[in-house]
Image (cartoon, rainbow, N blue to C red; front, side, top):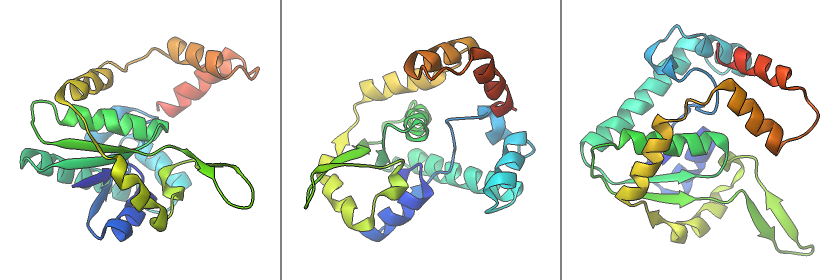
Length: 198
C-alpha cells in the first residue's frame, strides 16, 4: 500500500505508479488530535468553513475512512510504503504511521522527498516546493530509487516521538521565537495556539 499525507500528491502518485494510493488528509500539524474520536470537534467545522470543499461531516468521515483503510492493511500484514517530506504535516503523519504500526511487523519502506532540488537548464538555481502536491507526475519516478526500509528500531523511535509530543504552549513559543526571530511578541503566538487548539 502506498501512503502519503497530501491528497494532491496522492492523485499524482496514482497516475505515476498506476496503482491505488491512500492520501491521508489528517492535518496533524495543528489542532486537537482527539478530533478523530469526535465528529463534532470544532476542528471539522473550522476546516469546512475555510476550506469549503466539503462539509464538516464529510471531512470527518473521509479522514476516518482512510485511517481505517490503513489500519486494515496493517492488520492484514500488508507491506507499506510512505511518501513524505520535512513539512510539518508530513513529518507528523510519518510519526503517526509509525505509532499505528506499534506491535505489528509489516514491512515499512519510505520515500523521503526533498523540498528543494537543483534546477538545471539555461539558468542554474534551486527549485523549491511548499508541499509534495507541487511535484508533477512526470517527476515522481526519479524518487523511486531512493526507497529505503524503515527498521523496527527506527519505527520505535518515531513511535516514541509521536506518543510524547505533548509540548506545552510555552515550549512551542520558545522554539518558534528561537527559529524565527521576526519580532512578533510571545503573547501573540500564545493567542494563536489557543485559537488553533479549539
